[in-house]
Length: 272
Image (cartoon, rainbow, N blue to C red; front, side):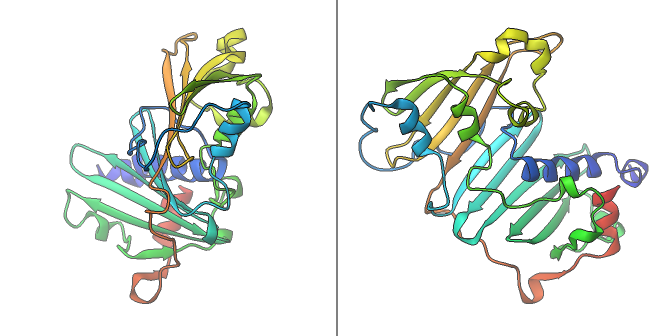
């Protein structure tokens, strides 16, 4: 157990995965969580321009704070976006037979904090010299600048970029839309799908079915891509969900006894 931690087994893999999601805004694979049906009033009426209507539902800088949730394989991601604060928060967790480790990253403007919580094995967090408070990170002490989390926009799963690759979008009624995404459209799109072997998909990568749902409040609540099997990779669903618009708490910088500067042990964990 100690050797796997010392060699940055699960812990460093979780840290790298978390920072990569924040830095590149990946649309993750899985079933997603969260209530996508919140809101009052009737479903949106059919639009004369379904693609434009769907893009208009994607979160932007004018939206209130909201939550998002994705799953990639066995890794679950829960997050919160606060456009007004130019902030994002992401929580990931890893379960071991003997303990569970959770990491939460909070980014506001250029500042970044991380909080670690290890349960199931008393004394392990103390042995690793990892405080339980928020730790303010110095970006210059993080080795890989490309993996340093930043706030990019109010669409953490990059759903708008996926929708834009569709030639046409069909309004199926009751707030549901459908179309075909082109995962080969540009380099940014291809890089967003680390779990998908775009090359192995061949021509099928240019026409991947997607379904999107817009809630009664006019906000995008889910986007699902049905990726076919390719090579050794089984068919999968790529899903992103947005919810709790206006109900999620606003993000603020930790203060007082809630925070401290990150110790050397935190950088050792993140840098491996």
